[in-house]
Amino acid sequence: MTPLRETMIKMMKLRNFAPRTQKVYLSAVEKLARYYRRSPDLITVDEVQDYLIHLQEDQGLSFSSCNQAKSAILFFFTYVLKNTQLAVTTPGRRTVKKLPQVLSKEEVANVLNAVPHARDRLCLELIYSAGLRTEEVIRLKAQDIDSSRMTIRVVQGKGHKDRETVLSEKVLRRLREYWACYRPKTFLFPSRHDPENIPMCPSVIRKAFKKAMKQAGVTKSGSLHMLRHSFATHMLEAGYDIKTIQTLLGHNHISTTMIYLHI
Image 1 (spheres, rainbow, N blue to C red):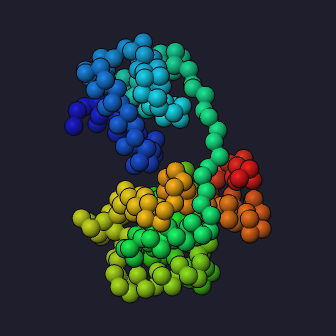
Image 2: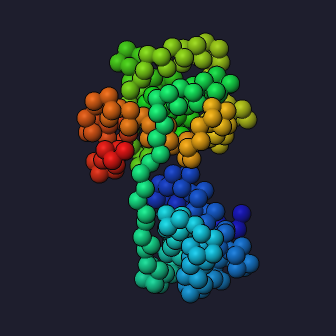
């Protein structure tokens, strides 16, 4: 590990960045270095600006992806190289607001039924029935499931916040069957390489969802997050108020949840 990479990791840990954010930021700086074929501390501010334009115009990345790369590079310049000039000369890029893609209840059922592995299907059922994020579902533990109150406790979800969401009776039955079969020690869905200390890789669930979408004949484009969007939309259609849905999803601002009113 190079001293620059080591320093950047330390700076991110001091600011309590999530592991996924750390990985994304490190990758963005690595791509910048590979583009210019030299160490990132030898790259000038003007070159960073040219690189961001390259990402937008030549590679056709979305504005959100460009913003993410900019944030990572800005962090590197500011906290690793102690160079604040980039913060002044690199303007923020506008974002494009899009409505989230949503599955119908029938499509959700078809996708879930197309998942052959019981563990993968249970993960997807939890995401849809409780509005969980991928990182949240793989980090669930047995003590997070409260069958007496029919709730699921999300520990340190996005934004390092705890919250509670709903537990469906059907999923509870599935969880009991799964527990009786596998008896996981720490995480409900552990890694095969280190089951006592590490949860399963989120890419496993994403691949299972993508494969099930194809198997079910669902042609809508979207990521695994589509199940969370579908949860919120179906809750709204069932008559739940927007404030309750905001709490279950763990949104900081009601405006984030309000987007489901437009679907």
